[in-house]
Length: 458
Image (cartoon, rainbow, N blue to C red; front, side, top):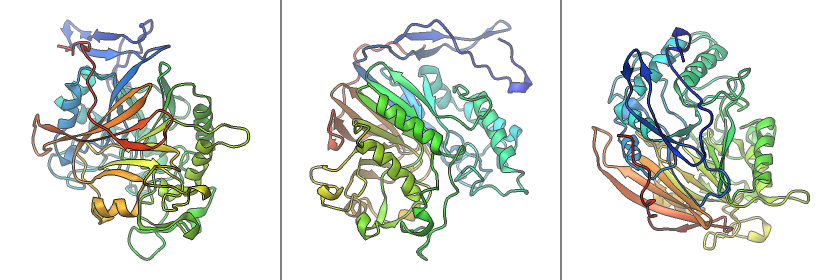
């Protein structure tokens, strides 16, 4: 293969003829020089008995060191890594974090900026090792382009002074596809990035695009209190989109048609309701704190709940596990449409039994990015207000480890000891599981690593 400046001297090779469920070792040669040996693994076909993956998101180089990536690279028994976005950050030096300096030092706006930022992150030894040892399935969130991106713009974009939004997105996505191990879904529209992966008959993984194709601009809050809003006014407008009708239909069709034991939905922002004042939906729903999450798009979320619940023509969809990033903190939730209504007969939720939960959600903390201060409540208070959350940890950095087999899916949260310098320390935080057919969470213990995994690349 040849490469040149037109693709920033990057190389991506989609190798054909590989066997399923097989570990391969590879390397590149150029002009007599050889790369380090890499290791990857193909997806199984047919029967699959077990899946182990790491889940990561939100790696701000300006906030510290990527120790979580190194700890994941050392886990030989993983089948793959799922990255839920904010793989890079667009900010210039000092705009968001100052632990380490960026290249380029200015905010990424142009193609040259985004290419340089990707190249700078890729020089990180811990990130290189992650890619060297494991295959990755990735989606973007907002910072691959700009903070709080939507179809028409972003919070961190000034139209005119920073060029047009259309040109900025095109530049960011060109660099993304050059530098990331991601296939182009639609060469005619690089914003389309939703796609699916089948891990044999065990897991169908559906990866969503939630930023650039159809997402309606985030609304301003409507209560007079900074950051707090209610489900009223424009927030109830059913025409506002998170995914858009095409991707919504794709997701509904894939969920309903899946014959896999588990349906994983990989996506950027928290799906579960997060409130600072609890009320049932009938009483107004209470007060919410993040317009960028699905809370800011409740009619769109309700449409997905209708898919999970089923109707006269389509059966209910069970064994759905939502994997989310963006929150820079750790969460495990029962997904209930009306979590502060204790009457399950009217569509509510029983926090003691989990009755009324339609699916579960595991939210990964960040690799380095800092926790959001605007919630302003401790974990214990948040659980009282939001009884569908079974685990909340707001301050630690790390990753999730997921184990799936025919009987259950377990999520473990693992935390590094520091991001202030390179370190090998990590610790287990908590584990929660969902049993086959339960659609609700229960506490769990650490899972057992796979015996005799294929050797790591030397």
